[in-house]
Amino acid sequence: MEFAELIKTPRVDNVVLHRPFYPAVEGTLCLTGHHLILSSRQDNTEELWLLHSNIDAIDKRFVGPLGTIIIKCKDFRIIQLDIPGMEECLNIASSIEALSTLDSITLMYPFFYRPMFEVMEDGWHSFLPEQEFELYSSATSEWRLSYVNKEFAVCPSYPPIVIVPKSIDDEALRKVAAFRHGGRFPVLSYYHKKNGMVIMRSGQPLTGTNGRRCKEDEKLINATLRAGKRGYIIDTRSLNVAQQARAKGGGFEQEAHYPQWRRIHKSIERYHILQESLIKLVEACNDQTHNMDRWLGRLEASNWLTHIKEILTTACLAAQCIDREGASILIHGTEGTDSTLQVTSLAQIILEPRSRTIRGFEALIEREWLQAGHPFQQRCAQSAYCNSKQKWESPVFLLFLDCVWQILRQFPCSFEFNENFLIMLFEHAYASQFGTFLGNNESERCKLKLQQKTMSLWSWVNRPGELSKFTNPLFEANNLVIWPSVAPQSLQLWEGIFLRWNRSSKYLDEAYEEMVNIIEYNKELQAKVNVLRRQLAELETEDGMQESP
Image (cartoon, rainbow, N blue to C red):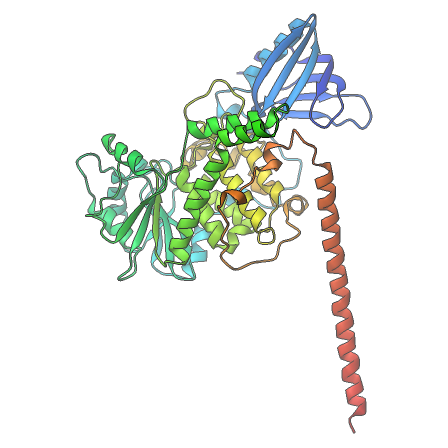
């Protein structure tokens, strides 16, 4: 298919652009295969380059011969284009609708993007499972790399290489995979070097109504326990939902077959409930007319902060089991690709200082989201504005980033990255020139040959010039476990995401810059103090030598 077939009118003059925080500007609108571009001949006017894949929905209005297109973006921005001529307006609108809903992944911009920067690091090879395993192998010899899923034959949503107990062979893993939803047998998610406890994750067991069991499954998860120790299974569904799953062939671990494990149910919502919550929240944030009572009522009705609290509470429980109880845990819901990953990754941010560094957090995203099979292509297909909702869209990853922001806000010196880093990840998950978040799992990415045909997001982010934008000036390495408060009073609306197009951040940006300047000046003064101290010590040494007979 040629993009030209979808572009009915490639260019229109005298179009007026209205967007947040900029004065209205008149210019020429151009449509390409992947971008909507508006450029003006006025001096000091920034061009608009908008990826079609960032467009969530469009509305059309007509007043006489003048047409207006309102573009609603996946990053929650709303842009208005005033276009002279009804025919041109209709053509532009239908072209945008066609170009923003392309079915084929290979027609998306990452396959056509060619970087203008020097590639210093191939991000596709920055966080390989073998490298992650090396970090653990120095502390324990009880685990091994398994290549049982090399051709994605055992589990289509797992990577080719996984970490499993050394005492369990690949044949046993195949039997366990047949007993777990989607073939997602228990694998290592995190090893706590302080006490040797682990977090494992999986899909639900397929016990069904007959109470089916699998001896190999029992042996696998028991292999993670120390002698005389108990473990915890954290099920991210309510007991009622887990029991209903048995009627559909799913279920949960029976106490009789897993006597050393205590099962805890912590209900975390998923799918359309989260999507509806996001829609309500964005609607409330965009409505500038309501009074205080109405605003607070709509914020509460969205339930967004309630979902944040549920996820953080479960992550804190998981971290407590590991660090304070000294117990290993297995986490799963139904598939093990959504709420499970939210909990495993947030628990690591609480427990593991490396996950709070830039590269450590990137490794966490790769390991616990991309390689672990979170279906980004499905979950991030639409955002808060699209009317044609599919059942699999859900802001699971955005909720995770919001939870990270809540912890970052409570521990502002413990993270090497800043809020802009989290916002950037949100934007690229929904629309990007990079191939990192394309596809639903490693198997799909392999078939699409993303490593050969697209650029990794990490290749761009990890360049020194870009990293400086995402580095937290307050960062001081903190090797302790950090315990965030999950009390309702401690959780706040993430203004940097949900209010950034409604309210100017000019003064906050100026204050941030002033803070950076003060920190840099403080470092300079500290360096001068150190030099003067050394000089004083040298002078005192010389005086002592002269006074001695």
